[in-house]
Image (cartoon, rainbow, N blue to C red):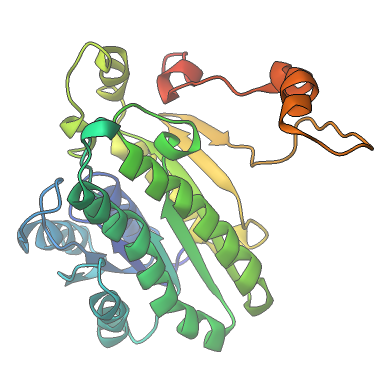
Length: 304
């Protein structure tokens, strides 16, 4: 594997038993990395456990001549997430990169969403990303290098119906990644996000309703292997100057998302009252208001 972009690296990929995570793990191994394949093997709803998804990816990597070890732990708790990083240290002696990819969905229209729907999705899709990243951070700091790639989503960056829990988590991931990039820069550690466009078992759980018809029609044409090259590239030393960014991967299209910045302002030397805000401030800014888009309203062109 000499000359491969991840030659000699040790990479943790969570949720690597299938879909995008499995494709990233397999490509990372082909590019020279030793890969810890983490997957609890639960359902896309966040229930149960099964060792076979992680084992399947490990077997595929080994059959192709690569190096991999399984980890069957949940990332949704502090101790087990730290144990995932320890699994990589036990198997390979170090850790150089983390791909936070594990995720679950519990899509429910907001006024029917339960506390369990909210808590369960946040525990995996946001808390878990923090826990694994925090567990790796001490090792990255000590060695003066490291790279994170976190999976965000246009559900958070733009919006989607019936996904308040998932959207909040995934927008939170973007904020988490930026904070890691800022705080860990001095130690040579990088952090970036990818919004993956791919039809996986999670996407397949989206209700096949009239409102989701167009979204699902496009999603079924998107394959998870198309996300892996960007993720692997961002883990490599060749991307050493890339940090704090939000990317997208949509078939053969690579996307860079903007980040929140002021778009318009207004002021008064007299100070504001509720009525003057209504009369002056809101009309002055209304032309720059963001519409209530969902992801499919923004990505209107066919993937290619």
